[in-house]
Each structure stands twice: as C-alpha cells, then as structure tokens.
Length: 128
Ligand SMILES: [Zn+2]
Image 1 (cartoon, protein in one colour):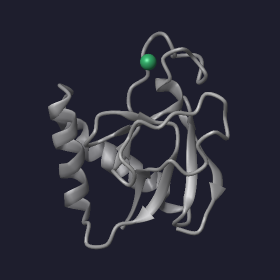
Image 2: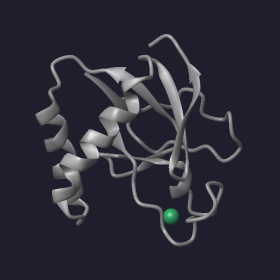
Image 3: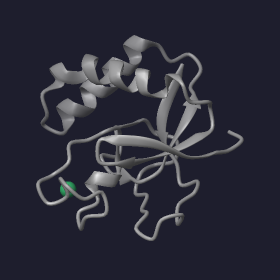
Image 4: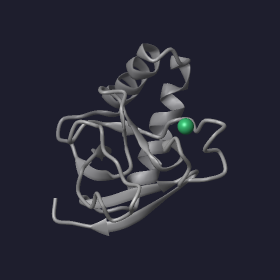
C-alpha cells in the first residue's frame, strides 16, 4: 500500500527545511503547538513538519512510497503504538490511519509533499 514516509529529498528547497527523521520511516501529521498554530514558518517548526512514527522526530519533507506487504491493520498498529509511546491517546490511531490513506490516495509514488499547517501539498514528484 501507499504510505507517507520521511525523506531528505528536496531538503533545502525552503530556507527553514529540516529533517531529523530516519529515511523511509513512516510519518504522521502531528499536533501543532500554540507557538506555531498560525504560522507554518514559526519558530518551533511543528506547523510545517511530519512526525516520524519510530524516531519521534520531525521532517519537513515526506515521500509517498509503496511499501510491499504492509496492510491496513499494520498501519493502524504502527500509528497506535507510536501514539502510545509518546503518551497520546492511541484510540485515535484508526481515524489517523484512514485520514493518511485518503490523503495519499491521489498522489503518485515518488510524490514529495510538504506541510503548511493543516494543508499538505505536493512539492515535487521524483522517480522513487
Ligand atoms: Zn510546535
């Protein structure tokens, strides 16, 4: 299935890009703190970043990748355990997984996306 993953590809396109995630790890769209709530280019950075499910770090660039053998149940479980590890309510996992699947549905594998608060937009499409 197609999944949203961390990538360093296109880093530097924006002056305030950063990538502290592990290349290829699954990411989700984390909560934005009060400081960056109205500004995707704010001082914290959470309004323009995706959160790594394993590293619990952040990146401003994510890639749509085809991950063979991964099921919808695996995806829910990956998000559930990540939320739990970080002290969030894991009962949101199913809802989050559904939202992320819907998000990537229309994008090709190799699409690099960026986040502007609640909007996720394609920055570029590369050969995966
Ligand atoms: Zn923040």
